[in-house]
Image (cartoon, rainbow, N blue to C red; front, side, top):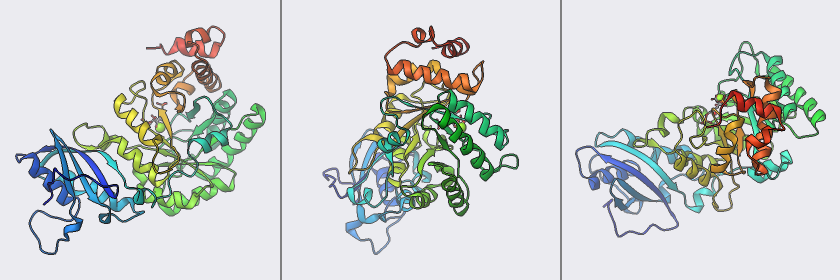
Length: 403
Ligand code: CAP
Ligand code: MG
């Protein structure tokens, strides 16, 4: 009763696409187990099943199966319950050797039951007053070591060198040597100074990742000091925390989503959950910016096609949801801006940590070199050409060879 290859999904169905490797059973049987365990059934027949809730495996092509689920199986506005259904027990079943959730198509009623991004790409570009080039970001490095004043000073150097957005690293929260509130106060003070000196809007993205009540308290601290952004490690914090934060900061603070720990289940091409699915659910719950990788250009293992699907998930038309800014980060430096933009285009945020603060002449020069590289590619000029008249870029290209 779960297999119906003649079924055509309706616009009311939630549709999942899975890569399935059965374990010594047929593909059909394996798909039946997946459909049952992710919805209403269990390993054996039980009385009381409501037929209208039974999902349909409507397509099996090789190892790829598609399942249409009646939307009544899901609680609107509850991403945890949705994931506990379509991305829960099924990954651990004995009858499945490998299983990967490749894509999810949400019906309008479920999409509309979430807040979605509050600012999105257009709202962020309005805040930054930057329209036609990639935004340039940096991560304060070393990840952990600096105290609050040192952190603020490095951020100031980056801002006056031309960086638009400075973020905390994913594991910097409130440390014995770098307390959250003191860091926010010191850093936003120098952010204001950098704005006055450059005449440009400058952004600081403090990491509020913590237990949810503490997370909200920290978001309020940021708002109290005049910050416009918060950053959350959405995988380690969890989608319930993200939903709580999104509800709380509604239209007051931009949410930057870091995805640390994602590779524990997105990396294996045969088992786990694709990053494109994570991108889609993050957009529904309501992030404004999300790390999606560097299309194989930077230090993180990336599969170009997968990361293009992520970008698509963040920006495609989806029942009027705002678009989410794709963030490219990880092992980037000025010399990689050109190959990156060639693949990803200009409507991205490019972040470099080591690629700014590891510059031979320091953070301010590293920031200048990043900004010069972005200006060059935005004007369609080669980096080598642009470096002839921009010494910070020239130094960076000398230290980090272009591939
Ligand atoms: C980059 C980074 C980011 C990665 C995360 C780091 O620093 O701060 O967390 O970009 O990876 O800690 O590695 P660098 P992803 O610029 O010095 O590499 O964006 O793929 O989630
Ligand atoms: Mg980091």
